[in-house]
Image (cartoon, rainbow, N blue to C red; front, side, top):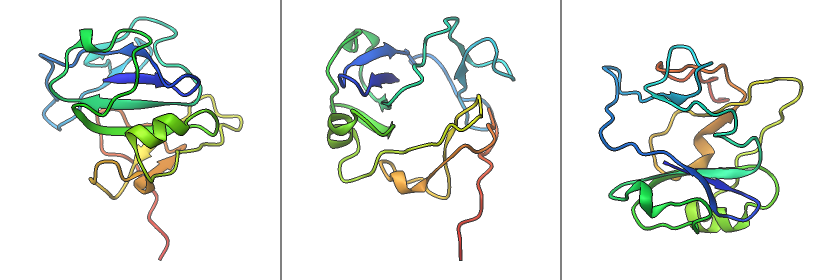
Length: 148
């Protein structure tokens, strides 16, 4: 799992998933010690996920060493991705999610900002995302019904 900065379209963090398994419900939770329930992969750093424009990409067949900090964005081995923010994401959009819009969210006064995939299992289809839903770690997403 590789986290990219929208500012320079380079990686700022990578998380090795090899050897990890989903739980009995099919979820693999990654997060800080503050997340409840406790994550399967614990990241004990206050700055592991930047609160700025960027992207998250899931790769298959790659090693953690393939994505050192500041590595260029790539599609080699790409399984799925989401790009979010309103500025500086053009290269990430073109590379990771071509012909899809960036996910934008209004943080308002909420301390928790979420991006949730709803009603679609099609990889790279960003139109199936909603923002600012109630977080549901290790459970199905709580998705609003689409308009009729």
